[in-house]
Image (cartoon, rainbow, N blue to C red):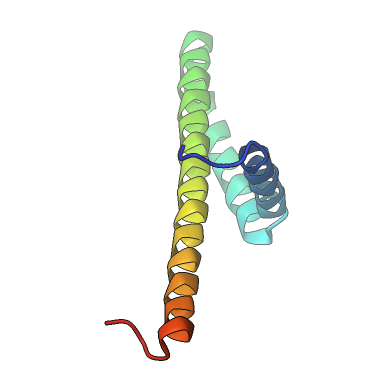
Length: 103
């Protein structure tokens, strides 16, 4: 990641964890997870133990990858927001100094 204060990465991780925990409480997400569990249970019934283990490992890897992607997107969006805020602030500061908008 870019040069940033040492406190920023842990702070973003805590915020991401808070958002993730709140999402877990969302009724729509809870409903979708229940539906997914029903589908998994139906699928599992047609598999042998070895296939179930392989499928479980694949599912865990996929979920971990998706979680990492979401964290990376959150961090990138956060940094982009900082850059946008800084650019807007800089533009407004230039307007104040010169008395008119910069072209």
